[in-house]
Image (cartoon, rainbow, N blue to C red; front, side):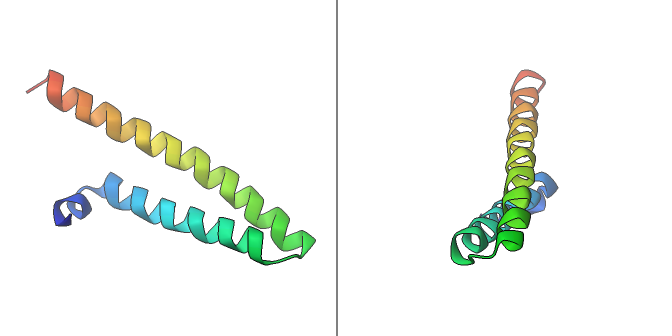
Length: 68
């Protein structure tokens, strides 16, 4: 687990996932229109960032396997 945090992309992935969970929790908890709009916007942006990080990590693993 500690080797995971030596990779900057992996630690950024964990941070993004944590922020996404917090944003979704704020969306479901508060009933204010403005806070719902902002947290939904952040959830969408963080989801796109999370997908791109997964693709970058996958690409890095594939390059590591193919180019020893």
